[in-house]
Length: 271
Image (cartoon, rainbow, N blue to C red; front, top):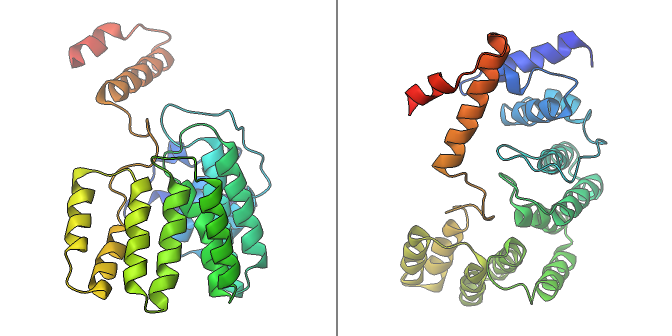
């Protein structure tokens, strides 16, 4: 990709309604910048541009020990890129073979990466494979994989995105057959593996109170579209952590712009 083409993509991402600062996306030699630009182009419906950019990162090997205090790790960048490439190929071709390969690689990275994901839902990355299998007429295989996941995760109690997604997937299949009571039971079971909040508990209680199984299922299914809080602990920084990052960045900028001037006194004025 030549620099003129690259800068055109960067300009589009940097100037749309919710622009991303150039410092996050301008450096072509930083593959994470290409990752961000490619994924944003897909959001902007520029499928051709998104594929052109994402194709440059599909073979990158991420540093699995990269674990920044803020922002996405290399592993999470790569997972999201593979997810989006899979979606583009599926939308363009309607065949699942290549997308399933990309999603399998993304799932393996989710399993192998031992640090916090800021954005990606590991369970949703995994279940996307099952959704594609169902879409191309291989639902029995998809349900078998969901059952296998439940067996694999049976000893991992508490918050578990894989168990949650497997049970919701099974519930969707039951509902498609008209078995709404059983589907509701699956979703209720799924929420035993979800990071519940007061708002989530309120919405689930409202769903359970619906008059008919079909209405209960519809209300439960709506709840599954809401991420009430992050899946992973330590995902959201504390105010103290944010302030420390701001101070550190301020010191670095001052040192760079003023030849090493100590900015401690200036920072103190902000407190």
